[in-house]
Length: 230
Length: 230
Image (tube, rainbow over all chains, first blue to last red; front, side, top):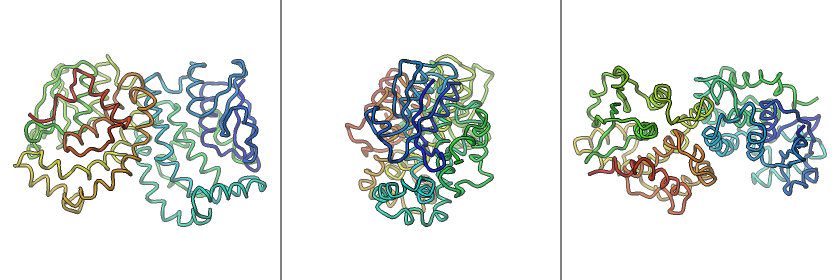
């Protein structure tokens, strides 16, 4: 049994893309897990990890081993539970690290400004003020200003997804005929966005949308069952 | 014996990043190869492949099998000569395809404008006019205008390399402790640039420069022996 500390909003919504990577990695390996939810103002719940961010896992089946940081957790799971590899070996793990480094600046940073105002409404009212103040400080604008004009930014954003699109248009998953951790990294950005907002990032006929549909078909529909709100 | 059709400039210089990927893939697998050089105005030399671009290979050890397109060639080599895998299995091959799709728009497209005018001088004089006209049409500016201001663009370019930098700062190669095709994809952009121009894209203490040094140490110094001019 592995305990996963996951960020939570109103109505049990789960946004964190980094937690989604781990939730999918746990499912991929067939490992049982249990959630501890952490509200935006409840960072003390993960203070025992020596840092303030989710995901954090505690592996009760391995002496209560604590690991934080999504990449470190994925590597820990791969080393400790070798069944159903997340990477397919050392070379795949190496290449996946580059994808892990790229995902943030490569496309996730461009998703944020398109859904950030909508996302606030999906946190608990008690968290709105902190959410707004911390994000407005980061962007140097109001959340409304950050999100404004997103329709006009959509064509450039969709064009920037071309490497992902070409890949999943030529094979079922980023990791080939079967999904792996590189899929979960990239998927997590889109999962975050669609739980945060109804804004349509992708055209309906985008091959990336079809690939998201294939991820949605995995693990008994996990990605459509958890995190959407009660 | 595999024949590799490779683009050539003045003094036997070899610029093509796509050919470099294949030259390194052949060395990685320990396969013997022989070059046929193709000048900028000699596309008829590869007309037999049904398209005008290098690399093209002809595998004399496999009934003269012809393959073009660097990704298709890498996959052909992996399937036909399984020794010393380029990808480390199906999942690594899948993830490497995303890196292959990303490399062009992700960073190689930003290298071009920093070396394109210098590159012209390293082609044979007979090729200069065609080089200038075709590239100026593509960019919609003179080569001098495209290259102008490159020093000012350097900080943003170097910042955009952060995913590569973080990766090779944490492991020896992109593919982990040993190099693989994902390394050759990314390396090829820097190899192209340094054969094209003396302009320093990287700070001397950049971890990417150290990784390039590790690639330079492979295969009896192949990347420093071929392509630099006589």
